[in-house]
Structures are given as structure tokens and as C-alpha cells.
Amino acid sequence: MTILYIIRHGQSQANAKGILQGSQIDTPLTSKGKKQAETVGVQLKQQKINFDLVYASPLLRAAQTAAIIAPKLTTVFDNRLKEFDYGSWDGELEKMIWQKFPDCFDLRHNLLPGTAEINHGENFAQVTFRLQQLFAELVEHYPTKKILIASHGFTIKLMLNAVLGINRLSSLNEPTNAGLTKIELTSQTQTVYYFNRDLTTAN
Image (cartoon, rainbow, N blue to C red):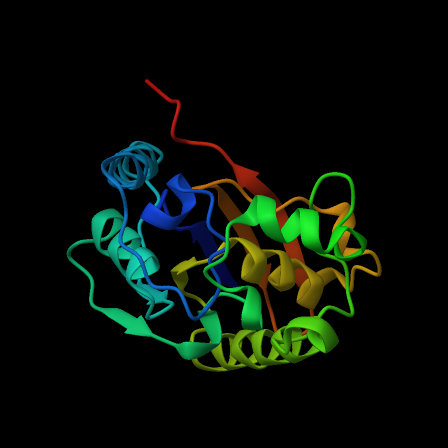
């Protein structure tokens, strides 16, 4: 069984400023974000969860998070783990985008499908497909390994779409900063063990 522990990066500078941060935006962690990652790392050690491998998005906020949690392991950077590309919306204030394009979001500001025609970014199916490819490769090459994956909020939502085939992706909120998701994979099964577990408030 391939076990994936998927961490959303800690708070980034863009997160703190309320900026919509897709694959085109690359800001580092804030001091709070670094602390979140440190706390998760400590909690995982206390739970005796050790990793054989680390995969991460090459974007700085995810790379920093992986390095803080697993400093002794070499990180493999994979572009398929980058954040969803919001096209022309990348780098804009979230509140402004919500106001200008209200039909593109639900009441909880979850992105609805079909926005690629407006912002010329990615669509859900594109990202879901590349994540399905990544998962298949990990199962083939590492069938008995525990892997830490550092990625991004919307991309992690799409990981669940890749596993569960969610028809209404907007019914799932993005994981919080440093939220932890566990997925177990075999050549025949894909199981979400838990989603968005918060280890940052542990004592």
C-alpha cells in the first residue's frame, strides 16, 4: 500500500493579504506559516509517522513547508503538484474577484466549474487528470512507501476529485493552511482516510 500524507502549505504572504494565489503567484511562508509547518512536523513525529519520500510542488510556499516538516529527506519537486492556475485572476484580491464574478462562486466562495472560459486558466478536468497520472506512478514505483506530499489548497481538493470522482467539487471546502489529508493507494483501490486534519493547535 502506498500511503500519502498530503499537507497544504502553511500561511503564505499572499494568504495573509487575501490574494488569490494560483500557480503564477510564488510567495514565501509568513512566520505564522513556518510555525504551522513546524507544529505539524512535531505532531507527526510524536505520532511516530515517518516518511520514506517527500514530493512537493516547486512553488516556494510548498517547498518551504516540506523542508520544515521533513528536513532530513530530499524533496522531489513535481510540477503536477503546483496550485491550480486561475489565469487572469492570479494575484488579484480575493474579495474583488468574488464581487466582480459572483456567478463563479458559491456562497462559501468555493470556485464553480466553467471559469476557464472567463479567466483563461485551467479547468478541473485538466488538473484532475495530471493528479491521477501522478498517483498511478507513485503506486507503481513505491507500492509500500509512506510519502509526504506538500501541495496547495485547490489542488488538494482536486486530489480528492481524482480519488472520489466528486460531481460537485464546490461541496468540499479547501483544506486550511497546514491541513493534513491522508490517502491510501493500491493498484486496485484508492481510499481517503481523512481530510484536512488540523495538527497546528496541538499542545
